Amino acid sequence: MTASSTSVLYPGSFDPIHLGHVDVIEQAAELFGGVVVAVIHNPSKPSGLFTIDQRVALIAASIAHVTNGRVVSCTGLAVDAAREFGAHFIVKGLRNSGDFEVEQQMAHTNYAVSGVRTVYVPCRPDQVFLSSRFIREIAEYRGDVSRLVPAPVLDELSRRFPARIQAQ
Image: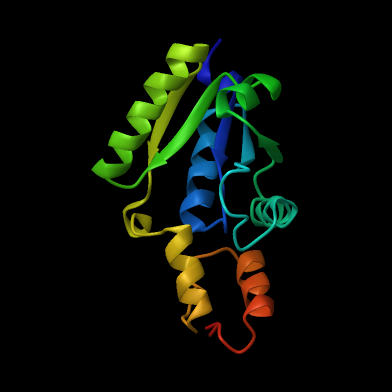
């Protein structure tokens, strides 16, 4: 099996998806035969800004140009989702060394319990600061997130926080 003929799982909460996430999806689609973007729901965490169904719809609209990508939602472990959706690897984006430390521990654990390997892709340098949490906060406090999120997310944030988002 070669990397170009297999599928990878890109798991996350994506609340909301931002341009850094889109970059990782595009890289995964280019490197592998397909990418499954899995919105993982953790019932023990707060529900978030967007519902799971809204996140799936926003991601699908944001990556419509990625012809070998699809979006799913699931609960439980990412390695179980990888098996369920036929992904041979998990892909994660890295912004900095702090991300690496967290993701490396998770990757070793995932491999130990399932044999599923994790592949890292670096985020573009102009996107290393992006964080869904910061985007939510900026949007809630009248900040301009137009250069941080895909157009479908900006539209939804504009509806959610009327007169607060300044599109340029």
